Each structure stands twice: as structure tokens, then as C-alpha cells.
Length: 114
Length: 114
Image 1: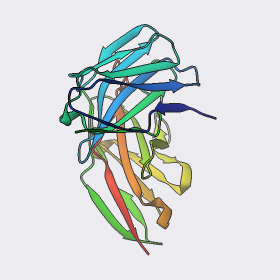
Image 2: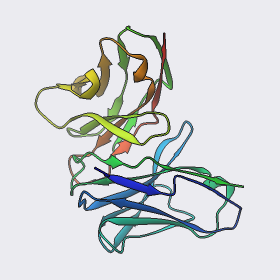
Image 3: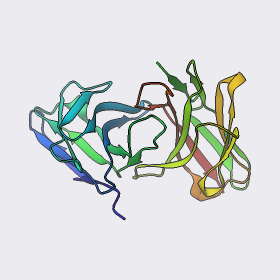
Image 4: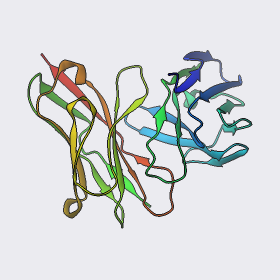
């Protein structure tokens, strides 16, 4: 049972480089989310998607872009990485509409920007 | 908009002792409430959830939580803590009318002494 899979698990970038984080879920979930987790800040929502082909901004979207071309995949892009984007990134998915749906999380991507 | 507060950043208990982690929420109507656990290096896992009905809910790993509307609280409890319970715990609240994205607290780190 794979659930939510994030690729890669670790990455080190230099300032100004670009990269894409991949999230894949095999539960046929409609909703997908990208969060960042920083010490003492909990989880902060970056972007989310309510279905294939749709995306929306969350609490901290600046410096990130996302795409949901296929229902099972949700990509998070950093066009020009900055040290402030050093964080642990989590992808999550949930079954359907409604905030009573629990979220299923991946194991995270640890990203360091030098 | 809903919000959630976890007053304790760190909690230290001895193995075998009882545990209570606090969660206070702010929302005008009946909320949807969740507790998640994050073990080191892993993503978040759902412990339990409250939507309606019995205000005492049972979860996995021997955890329970009680919804108290009068106190706007949803505290997590366990009668006897095991060393493997050492982790980060997150409370989340979802709005029952409209918003589909739960809001997370900043987390409480549980330290278990042998």
C-alpha cells in the first residue's frame, strides 16, 4: 500500500537553482496539498488542488508554482530557490470535498538551499 | 475563519505515566477536529477524528480525545505512555460549512523519559 509517495526524499540546492518536487497518490483522491514545515511554525499550506487541472493558493504561495496535470500527481516547483525555502515539504491528499475528510501524508522532502 | 492553538510546545513525561495534550480551537459552529502524530523523519498519521455524536472518541495506539464545546477544547489523552509515543502531535480543525482545508496547530513535541 503505497499511499502518498514523495520524490525526492532529500535535496540540496544552490541559491537560484530550480527544481520540482513530485507527489504521487494511488488512492484516487480528489484533493491534494503541499505544505511546508518549519520549526515552531507547524504546517503551512503552500498550494492545493481540488481536482485534475485545478490549483489554488494557500497561506504561503510566493516563490512556488504547482501543477496537477494528472489526478494522481501534484508537482511543486521552485523556479529560483532561496535560502528561506529551506524546509521540509509535505504532500497530502484527501478523498473528497469537505473538511471532514482526513488527510493522508507522504514522508516528506527535506530541502536545503545554500 | 477557524483557528487552533496548542499551548504546549514541549511536554515531558515518564514512561508509564498518563498524558494529556491540549488543543483549543476557534470556530463559530461545530467543528471537525483531528489529531495527527508525526514520528521523526516521517509524515503525519491520523490518530483520531471527531465530527459529531459521542464527545469521547477513541483512536489508534491507545489514544482518546474528548470534545468539550463549552471550553472549545479537544484534548488528547493516553493513560500510560510508552517510549515509542515520543513524537510531534498536531491538532487540526476543519470548518463544517464551506472551507475544505483543515487548519493545523503548531504542534506539541512529546518527550518520554525511561
